[in-house]
Length: 386
Image (cartoon, rainbow, N blue to C red):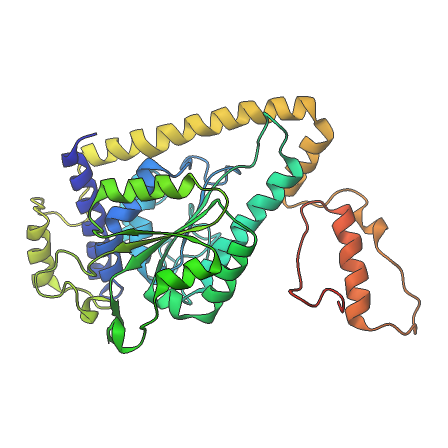
């Protein structure tokens, strides 16, 4: 892989994002421009996904917690070969389009989580990593590991200001969710100005205190450093990892890079032209994708992803042959179906009987847990009561 094709691919992600926002005259260009290199590295070198089958169960999950940067995700989905066309990118933020202003699960192929309210994507990523761990513990057998995917996320400063991120991060460390890797787009800018005006805590120390592995990448355009950090994160399955990547919001914009103004406003036609020149982008046409970039993404994501799914299908076929009952149970779980007769395990209560609702709820939940292997939950420190 040459430096040239990598640089061209990243420039393509950036220009597609800029063009989508310009056409809509609405959106957040700063994050996609700054975070494109880390997203490109993650998707082309680490993510196990199959664009031709977005619902392949053992795919890696990706949560863009900074959902306002959706143009970045849509550009990646298009280049990777998902069912998202250039026309869809041109309809960014339009009513009824497949490219709403914030990603929506179940609406756009390849989107694993509905995000936008800051911090919530981190909690969703933790939940997905918990689900992976639970299913792995329930179904995996030695030599036949059918659940072993990673959950990746990208978050920003705004996500880490929210209380939900603190609670979720604490739980992730407590549960030792080693297959959770969150990349932190650390650009020192918030919507209202320089970050230090509103947020001055030491994020690295905070996450280390939770029990996370924390890795820092000093240059958000250093693809080798980003790849090495992700590799290091994947090498430690005993704890989740936060990778702080220092970036420049609106990277490449001669007049707006590193400013809060580029967070949530289109660049404008003049600045767009100057920015594309800064990227050494020589193509006049908007929404242009060089054929070699399509070929590069096809080779690194689509073809490799199909191969990975085929390999998993072979393993699962062996699994079902050796463990037919568990295999069928797993298929039901993946299909969102409940085991036959599960309701027969539920307790029955006489009308008028006196029992606190939290107590009866606990009895029902425990009965369901015995009959439905994919069901699990928790109640913090109140299990004795409910």
